[in-house]
Image (cartoon, rainbow, N blue to C red):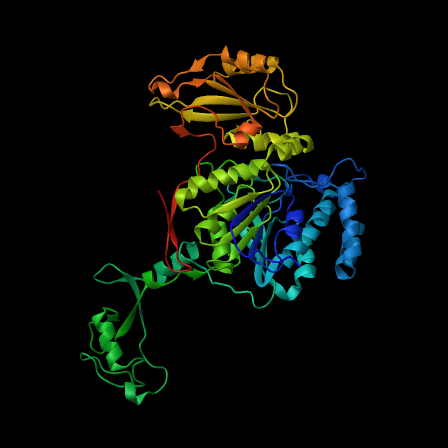
Length: 557
């Protein structure tokens, strides 16, 4: 059994979440898990359910490629699960394969199974899990979750209406449009806590307030006049108050309480003394409508949203706020094993939870690090990044293992954004770029970045000079594993210097800069005026405001 370490920092892991869950996350240590596993639900059904007989394609996830395909890895995983988990789970998977064959859907379910088993293990007995999916796979996942978590621990199937779906262009002509996602909510046991959530913004609640709370007092507060008549006969509560006779059964409150409410302006006195005094129930004192399992009040992130970072599967922070507030408390540990652009982590941080994030791409890790810094600044809690190269040897190993992951990681060392999010086709001579402002013109300046993990030559510096000119960039950065030769350094010097027109001389920087991975790991930096960098779309700055445990407020700067 994995044992928790004596001290804790928040953790951001690079790597396969299955390995990390097995080797690094202690058993029964996590209070809440949210996961949104990548899956290509937009693929046609013959792609999702068609049988795959080849073994060339490995079941894997890479940045922005939301699909798992059948191959030798999926076959081996299925074999291991059947051997390790004889009984209902093995029977279910074998029966499922008889129906789904070697389709992408079967590969997806097989690869999810050991991960869900590990997630169940790391949850505390009082923990909860929310699995985000869509109607394409939700029914299969529900059966799988019932076996792993026990049907008695199923709490809700939540339907999130993520899109209004008003346009006819959002669906095929031969079916109704799809505008919902599914969240499967399970607890580890009956002891898992739950904090009821309320919604004041729903249309139903606003209609309720508008139709029931029709009166307004002198201070402008909307209220409903509710009865103070006691349903049972209470002779000790029969008394006259300010000329208003008692109901036959008596009032619901004592005379002292009546006087207190009078002083507080909580009583409604009808003009006719024959009428009854009633209580003012103020609309602004209600918590709102208890949230049900249909979430239609949280919109997906639109193109104008401040929190939008350009990550294609990014979820709105309000969605995670509801989940984290409902199923955890301050100081609890929240885990997202497919953390993507880090929405779960960001929300957990500002709601004063501890957190663990896992992703298999350095692109996501770099985005999360920038998002956390942009959002919280000096208020950011300490955290560790685990699994990324920390020295030259591990950097070389990453370059040999996966050149694209190496490229994304190397770009993060100079705070550059990848030029392309998917694996490249033709090489444009640009691996990444940096935008910055160094004057009041409002026009961004550009730096282009090339990353080289193999053999380097002077001709590559000449090529970079040409790319800088072609792209109208002001600086070209050449990031390399190998140390540069003297001819390369000399060639870089011939490019001259970039001198910002409105800045002092100390901001002058070489137009072509060569930086080795070893230098960057030792703290070296790319030279350019760092007045305002806009490489990554910045998350809005927010401040933590200490308040009641379930009522912390956050405001934009």
